[in-house]
Image (cartoon, rainbow over all chains, first blue to last red; front, side, top):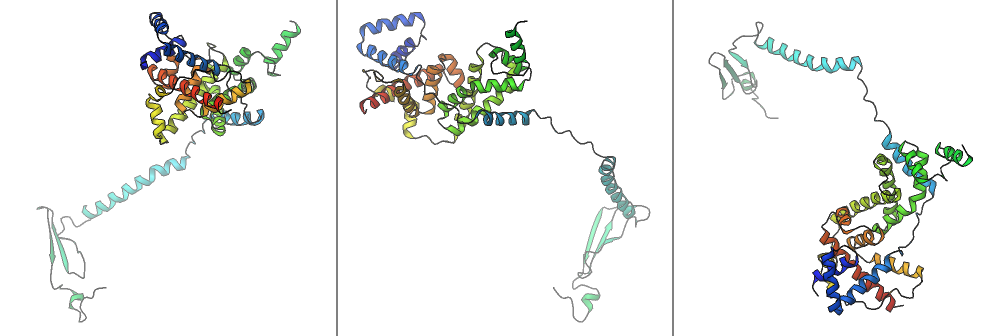
Length: 166
Length: 208
């Protein structure tokens, strides 16, 4: 007996077959003893189950079980904590701190390159006193020249002890 | 207004719900009457727990899931329109929660080769047909015990399809929708589950 016939037998038992297929199953049952036995087994099992489910009871008291449900419902139903409106000081602080930082930066830049600065600096930086390096910057030509003398020509290099590595 | 009607009004006003009719309790709960909902919980808690336990086969999980079902029931009360009984509606909620949990567990579980054979189908076709009714002559309590023991030996998928069809009386189409599988899969699983149950019950009868 193939699987399709077996499943049709089951569907026939469960009343899930359309009429035409149900008639076909009836014809099969008239000719096939194995089909009859299988249908009987399926029917016995179904009858054994219906109405004989084991009776179980919840192993917690009514009050205890309800208290857990009630607590969870209250937690889910509780309104969301309102968003605290920031104080006036906090609002101003949020604005002033970054504004102050920007103002300080602008001041430094202004001093460095503004009318009080060196303008086009011939020498903008000394990398290190010990190394005797000098940096020349030509703004017009957008060129930076770093002059490194070796040995270093400065007080440290010229001292009797010479430069020391630490 | 006669005394019976007066008592009914008093009951619905939250004084005592224990003798209230269920439709009235549901309506009151839908309006936010927690005491009415508590009475509904008291009346149906065993049934909901039993369904969860039959599917999960674990007491702690069944308690947690039935509790979760009640909380969901409260949240969705407005959706209950009375097409089925309140108990049936709640049972559907707990079944869906159990199925979600079983799917989560299946993703984490390593299947045994035997279980995979059962799932893929075909094993049941090698089982000899049980010709003797294995439940004949048994006391009801003994039969319940044997059925429960046999159900415990099925895989979750096979047990679920049997529970939904035999105990919840769902049609193939409904089961397929609930279990998120095809009707063909429902039929195959049900066929296997029934044949396996018959073999297990026959074994128990032989060994008695």
